[in-house]
Amino acid sequence: MLNLRLYMLQRLTAMLMAPLVLGHLAVMIYAVQGGLSAAEILGRTQGSILWFLFYGTFVVAVAVHGAIGLRTVAFEWAGLKGAALEVFMWVIGLGLFALGARAIWAVTFASGPGP
Image (cartoon, rainbow, N blue to C red; front, side, top):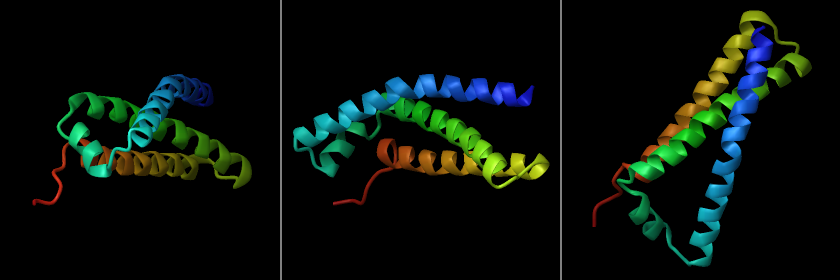
């Protein structure tokens, strides 16, 4: 039953990520074609709750999706089972979440070096 739940959760996160990926790509294309510098991009994202929510949702979905996918790979290819498999999945998921959360914080709320 756990495998079915994880399978369904991975499919749900994939459906959630699809429009987020398209949105991210659209924003990146706009930024590159517009010739925006990193400072200009940060000037637009700093303090924005909308960008925080957009990328926060993205990071949670990616962390869950990736951890479940790598759990399957670890089971099928490395033969991990039981508690080791579950610990592996949680470490990967929490690691992805921590890295993503740090990036989001840097882009939306952390202030850069002073003048």
